[in-house]
Length: 273
Image 1 (cartoon, rainbow, N blue to C red):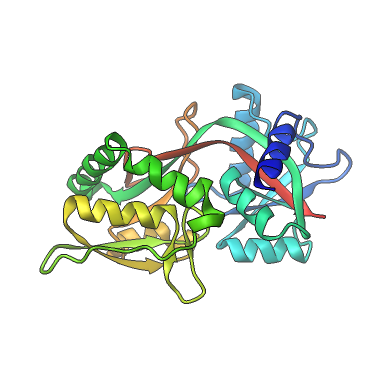
Image 2: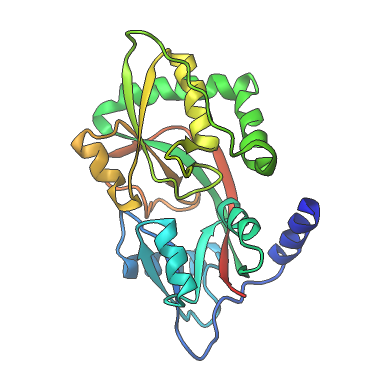
């Protein structure tokens, strides 16, 4: 069943994007970006389509984007038809489609250049960012990161929902990490409040590499930057914009990124069946 589903998605991804009807503007839900307003994000997308060949928008440029602070809020907006469709990273969209096969379908595939996952830190915490990069490189070199990707993303249905085990180090440094839970199966929060997913499993391995303890809290997407600035978090998770653009719609000034550790090439647009 899984292979058939993925094959269908591959066929869809070869087709051109046909998100919106030419006659009417349709609203597209997007998780809130920190460095751009909704209208600025729309202009950014149009520029990318014109100069880099993205097909975020149909040829008629008929979409308008609406921001949502959580994935749940965006789903509710789609379910109530407040928006015609929602735009999500392909891995998150596939998770949503598998979880709700009778409710959602793919509206289109937005092709962009490679988009990366990275961790964010304040500029003043460059030393902490560099320590995380060292640990990330070690996980890449010894194959642990690839194993986590397969376990928690590729094979999510088998074991991606398993609780993540952290090693506790007595008297060790405590690092505060905030996650939104808006990118399942990359990261999400279980019904019992437990953080889970690929990011969380990777964090546990980084903790073992650095011999530190983590305090994890849940925040809304719009609060990621303020959580760093206020000291509520030392580290946040989110994705870095496309490799062919100097403009980063979701990375505000004063935030620096770790090295990338996961990537995708498409965003999927999902609509109600």
